Length: 296
Ligand code: GLY
Image (cartoon, helix red, strand yellow):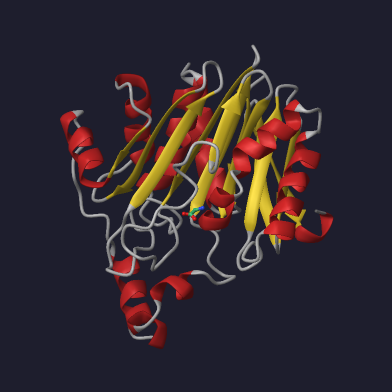
């Protein structure tokens, strides 16, 4: 059995379809998940991540991604990468072809080019239009960071978790971060322990939503460790979210979401506010599950 999870209503099915197609071609779990996230990044019509997603306050896309292998806790990540996709594939190369965990900015871009990635313009007509619209708002000329943190901006990350027989787990995430963010800002997604975590002894977890708060909570690591103590994935996610709401005053400024899967294939998720749609695919058959904040 191969179980794959992908976040959010619109990108989730695109990620799962590409991932399952890769799986049926015989790819291993890491490459399966890479294929899912890469498909979302390369789709110019999908505003969520990668090509055509929403840029920072300077009108430039700065992309973050990470992948973690639960077999030996190896991990690779990139942050603030401009002008190259898919960044999840660069992160995987960092994991597999260097002794490092993370490369950033221009140096990550140079590493990618040295590995055969081709630079390209990631701005499309549609995201240029949206950026120009935002520039015309009062927020566009004043406080971009606080504008970025509003309740409507939460579909900007695709996080995937995978489990195969073994048991073996992989967690990965790709994001363009908060729209209109301060240039140079990095959130939880490329940070091991914050945006993703995987350990074959226990299971895996991921996050999506307001990266600053998820990072402060070490949300993914915390959730995996709660499962290690015996909590189900659902209870572990709720435990993390309850703790965030209790300790972090900004945890409800925007949705903060954790999702988790244990080595038995049980799945759970929780969010600080609103509702969170999670796609779950078991051997290619997908279902959508909605988690609401009042359940946590
Ligand atoms: N969770 C994505 C970000 O805050 O960058």
